[in-house]
Length: 519
Image 1 (tube, one colour):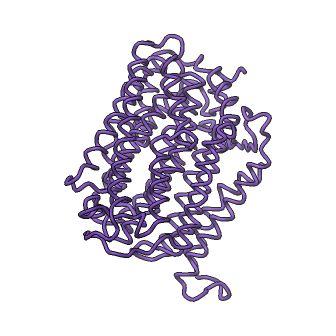
Image 2 (cartoon, rainbow, N blue to C red):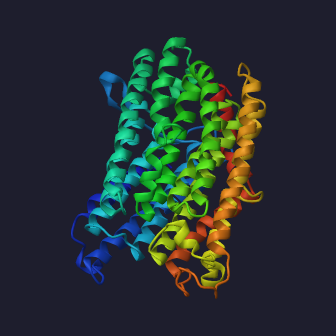
Image 3 (cartoon, rainbow, N blue to C red):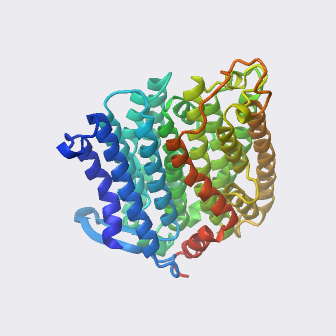
C-alpha cells in the first residue's frame, strides 16, 4: 500500500520526462505523434490500475485512519516532512482523478486538440496529473501548497497553446487569479505552521486549534480561505472560470471542472475545518452566504445564456453551472455538520463525474458543428439530435438530468445532504441564517432544472426533417467517445443508486475530522 501510493504520485512525473524523449524503435507505431499519445494512455492507465489496486487494498473497516502512509523528514529546520497518506475523504478524489486523466488521455489519442507538439501536450497532462494526485495525498501544509501550485503552469499552457478563441487572455486571467489567491494562502499556511511549531496536518488536526489563538485562527481562515475560494471557485471570485472553460480544449475543460475545482473544496475540509475550527465557526455564516448567492447567481447566469437570441456559448453555460454546483459544496462545508460535510464531499465526486461528461459532450458537439454557440446549435427549429445523432442526444439528455439532481443519479445526494445540513447547522451557528441559505439553495435547484431542460429542448428536440441551420446528418458517437464516456455514465448511476459506497468511506473520516481526531 505504501509503495502503491508513492508510485501513483511519482509515475506521472517519470512519464512526463519519458514523453519528451524519443520513442524506443519497437514502440514508434505509425508516427512519433502516435507513439507519444499511446505513451500518455499507457502511463495514465497504469496509474489508474494502481489507484484501483490501492482502493481494493484499502481497509474499508477503518476509513477514518490514514493508510498507505509515508513519513520522512525533509527540511529539518522548518520541521517539514514528506508525509503521505489517504483516508476515506481523499481516496475517492484520488481514484476519480486517476480515472478522469486516463479517459482524457484516451480521448486525446483519437481527438488531439490543435496546437504545438503532441510531446509537450502529453508531458503537460502528466505533470498536471502529478500535482492533482499529490494534493489529495500529502499530509504536510507546505507540501500541500507545492502540489496546489504545481498544477498552474501545465493548465496555463494547455489553455494558452491548445485552446480556442481568446485563449491567451483566458490563460492569463486563470493564472493571475489563482497565483494572487495562492500568495495569500501561503501566508495563512505559514501563520499556522510557525505558531503551532509544525506543518504536519495530522498533528494539527488532532490538536484541533488548541495551540492557536482565536485571532490567529481568524487570520488563517481568511488568508487560506481566499486562496481556496479562488480555486473552488466561490462567488464573487469566480470570474476567471467561464473564460478559462470557454477557451480551454475539451480535455482541459474536463480536468478543470472534474479535478482542479475539487482541490479548493478539499482544502476547506482537510485544513480549515479541523485545524482552525474557531475561525471557521466565525466565518461559516459568511461562507454560507457566498455559497447561497453563488448557487442562485450561477443558475440565473445559465438561464440568461440559454435564452433564445442570447448567443450563449454552451461551454460557458456549463462553466457557470459549476459556480452553482460548487456553491452547494461550500454550503455543506459551512454548516460544519457531518451531514453537510458528507454532502459536500459527495457533491464533489458527483460534479466531477457529471460535469466532466458534459464537457466531453459539448466538445463533441463543437467538433461536429464547428461552434458551441447555443443559438447556432439550436438552429431554426432545433438541432434535433434525437433524430440526427440519437445516441449523442441520449448521452446529452442523461448528463443534463443528472446535473439537475434527478433522484437515483449521483447529483441528487450531495445537494440534498448539503441542504439538510443547512436545515440544522452546527451548534453556535445562526439557524435562521442557514434556513435562508437552504431556501436559496432550493430555489437554485429549480432554476438549474429550468436552464438544463431548456438546453435539452433546444439542442436535442425538434423536427429532424425541418429546415435548420444545422447539417442534415451528423456522425453519431464514435467508438473512442463511447469508451471515454461510458465509465462516467456508469459511475453516475452507481453512486446515485448506491450512495453508501461513498458515504461509507467519508462519514467515519468526517466524524473524526470534526471531533478533532478524537473519535
